[in-house]
Image 1 (cartoon, rainbow, N blue to C red):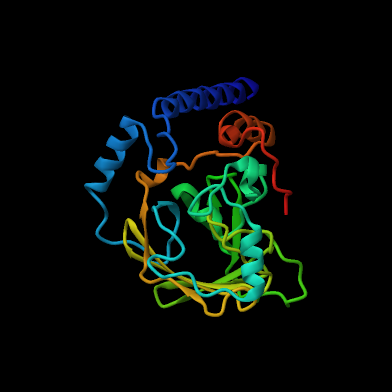
Image 2 (cartoon, rainbow, N blue to C red):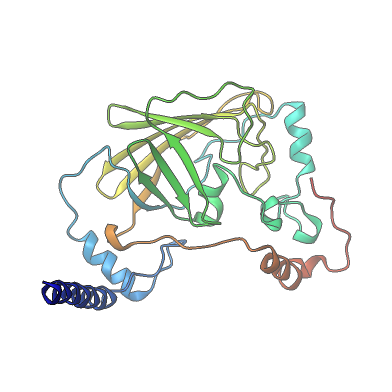
Length: 283
């Protein structure tokens, strides 16, 4: 009996070894980051996209999605209130028409603070991944590898006296084939975008995600922040994201913001244009 048991154990171990070798012969493609992928990964995606399924689950948002989009999508920035304009003027971004050398700026990204939402979805056209579970959907971002929770099991948003969070509080439910996310209580330290548009703790957001094709996901976003803006921000047209293929082998990048590396990069690259100048105090 013992010999038979040992033979079974050895057989299973041998099978595991061969399975590991077989899996190792099919490496993962390079991460889908800003659309830059290795030639082999691009060929694998091209082959997968040439034979897309004709049927799919419209309520399945799983996968890595990529799209060079922006919050406004053609809409002008709503007029700011006096409070919003004061905060906006205090922010010194590193890009856009008000851009200054990082040595003179105070962008939270330059000191590895969390970017929050929705900025983390738009920074440099990064990819993100939806991961669905029975209780919630996780939205994972390659920049800093952070994730956002969207609760789906009939949980309601907390009262306004709850603590704000970098990625806010979010709940979602299906309206036909559209996944509707309501969120609020975002950390007011967040910037909405790289240009330094502010968001207050009173900001609320509605997102309507619709999978219009197997490899296409569309988003219509509405941001309402009466403390800082006199009118809501609404997408002028749906923002389009493409599914990265092959679905079962695509990964997102691991773009952690490491304070020591960020400091060295600021000193040796970003701040050269502002060398010898005084930094703006951090907000």
